[in-house]
Image (cartoon, rainbow, N blue to C red; front, top):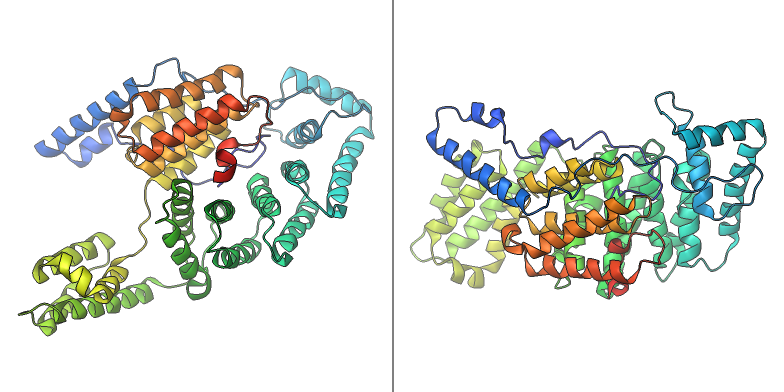
Length: 490
């Protein structure tokens, strides 16, 4: 996912604006439904529901937006020894964004910049230190999680050439290793997550996705925590592809097989893997394949007809020819998934005895279902992507409004993602103490008012898991705890 990195230097995607996501509670909805008494009643009911949801969150929680500071830690004096890599990244990041005429520096940053200008070689020294870290990383034979995390955090301040050199190092490590090294896999995903989106080309992202898709297939029988971490990496790459508007993925060789793998993982008994697979699948649906609309419709129509033929053949007294011919006529005027779903329901009603049909004619039912399954895009994915943008920019009051008003607010996947992001805010030291405490309080209020939020048991367990992590890891680094694999969350 385009997650908030600890330095706040990533470029915002230009998609997923609030107007596409937030509930329409203003005059726009009224004007669309003018003259309809029934729609007016529904509008009032919707407003009442939103107010009920909003009332469960105290007004002091995320009561205002908190733009992130450009200075996240003590800046080093010229020619002084650096405390850690994050201090280096903060310094180089400040030098990078200071080049923008539209960026207004804080007084402490202006003072530091003035001291840097007096030392002509200081900026070069800082860049040389970053280059040394990368050279040392490439020489390391054993790259543990700590070493990977140190070099990955440099992503936002790297020039394009250095970034691709480092990206190639991670790609090769994942590609050539017989046994999947998860620290390097996650490093590859985090590097993509933290870099300026303009650095990423469609060709490179497709190549990386092909590698991860192959790994996903090869790792299919591994423990769930392995699958989770691999699926998380796939999600990050797909988010980047959606952001950069990559299109025309090869349907047969890449898009369809990956969709099949993820669909199977969505049926996992492990709720962590189940959610992450669902997220990755939605991200994939936002990266179009190379099949034209007419080709897709023809293929699915044939699948529907084959399925109906098989169903009708096992029901006494039903003439399959009449059903198929009638269905052909109906399909001529249909182009939307909702309309095809209506056809599916009508076919089941006509045939009758649906439960026995599923058992006796499973092949036919599968063919029919597959033909009608367009891979529906769900509202919670773009809502979560918009939430990422709000969090990155410190728009917490707007984020709170989104959570309470989004039409998908009751969807367990949306709730899961919201709780994950609240946990990340609470764990991230770049935010002030009040903001982090507000995130924890928000989680508590959602858990406490579970009946109002209509929480599923898995979401309630997830909230408890996050709160326990936060309470037991106050001394840890700012690595996102809520994005870790199941084995790390136990």
